[in-house]
Image (cartoon, rainbow, N blue to C red; front, side):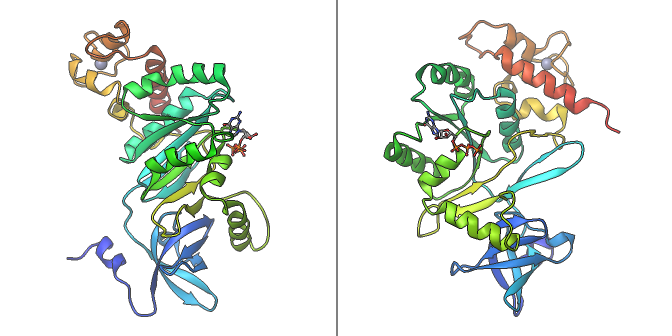
Length: 316
Ligand SMILES: Nc1nc2c(ncn2[C@@H]2O[C@H](COP(=O)(O)OP(=O)(O)OP(=O)(O)O)[C@@H](O)[C@H]2O)c(=O)[nH]1
Ligand SMILES: [Zn+2]
């Protein structure tokens, strides 16, 4: 059998296989199966690798050149009018970390969840700072619709209950590759440091390797949680301005688990769920809480409508 996947998977003489554990522009850090790491350069656009990619590479002196990127299981990315930004590839899970304070944006959360659904990556939500009792309760209530639509929501108190949280988190992360996303101030660094105590030192080394000495912006980074290297966390900036331009507006309800079942009740097959008569989605928004067929929260319907508008706006 021929095909790009097959061809790239074959390692020829002098080539090695590795995992991309950090990337910055056209450079990446590749980890070999023995755990050693080497700085590699991409040769041509086709070989630009993102964190989580499995690559073939060739040594050139004490550095390397990426010879090919293996076919990806998935690629988690965002896209606005100007550019596409890849977070990471070959993920099992996306963990969205938010907190009681600062107050989280439900729109931002929804965008990350939709992007994960579009790539068939399982999302998990964690709400930090349960010690801030009143704001935590408020935030927890705002997340109830997400629990009802089947998303796991973990309560955390990362600064206080270290061991409990570590165990709780590990139960959900064990053996998986998880991308951690979250708004600034939610506790992402606290979470990474709890699970990967050597993270800070590693980040320093990595940014030094990738930027030849300059400690500039932190790039996306892969961390092993266990010595056996079976559980991984990926830390990535860029939760803000989560563009969904790569998603077709008509596809949105299928990526929103609370809207999805109601589409079958719409009179028109091409219903946009915004003004049509006989719309199953709008009928579910009008339902009382606890309705047997399921209700759509007004906040979720507003998110749907504004994303629909955003994604159907003429682009120049
Ligand atoms: N009250 C409370 N504060 C916490 C908790 N966990 C973390 N914090 C605090 O929240 C602040 C932000 O935590 P960080 O881990 O730096 O958050 P971050 O998401 O990495 O933020 P950036 O560095 O801005 O991206 C710090 O002052 C932490 O000490 C918690 O469980 N409860
Ligand atoms: Zn409809």
